[in-house]
Image (cartoon, rainbow, N blue to C red):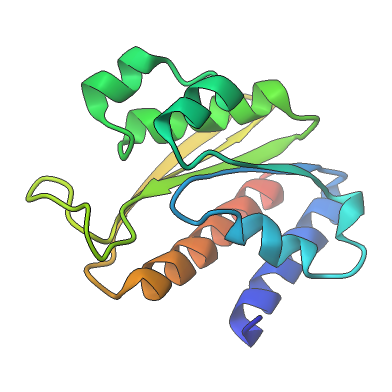
Length: 164
């Protein structure tokens, strides 16, 4: 793992420990990279509850309870789906804070409205906080989009943990 990912993951774990918080992730385009970055650090099991890799629309619906109507109306890569994924993860996990990620890592799959590099994030907490971030990274290549998305998700978790 790169030094910046390791530092970001460690900062999340430290912030969660300081506030007694547990984490869950709900990932699509990152395919578990956020959970992987967190669990790459020894001792993370006191903070990380679980990760959901919901790459397909069916997985988003079955594992997180994302309504089919949300995906049909707004698409899998949308604010609405990211927020539903975060709410679903909170409902299914023993976690205090969650982050969700859904996007188009490329190289294909983009459209004029939803280009390669578009990623939606949502972070939510049991206390009712819900934030959304949209990033348009551009066509950085699949690895680049996934890496930047992982860093963004870790930053959102850290910020949410520090608000506690």
